[in-house]
Length: 201
Image (cartoon, rainbow, N blue to C red):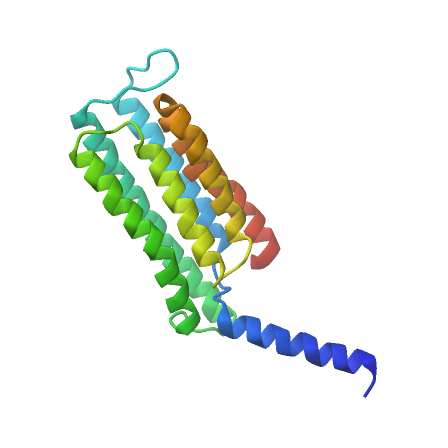
């Protein structure tokens, strides 16, 4: 057996090991649609609270709760779309949608996400709204990085981007709305397009 055969065998073994330990059927298109949902939701929220001053949006408690409800709808649509498109891709690739790798992915994604969600709810209950956008971006970024170990490694780059945006947003919380739009809207679309052409075709 020549060197080329050995290299081929090693490559196949590496591919099988990677396939068994990582869930790689995430759909790039779902990222694009999640970003579009976020932009539409942001546009609706902007319309509802169209009292911008000096380039930023101010919210009182009631309006904030309305916008938070819009956020929940966006998240639900994104999750449903992601599950549907990822399931289709997994079937097309001959992979199981619910196996040990997808369970590890979901578990590691939810740990920082749920922690962040609970913390955000606590400060919202205290009517401290200023850092909400920054915290959403930071905890979501941490969730992506944590999950990237069990899925496509490229996800961590989106995670780092979200964290950086969140930290910058923490310095200028009055512009939190716009950082949220960039992080959850524009960056999701950019990431989704890259992943679609890199992995979906």
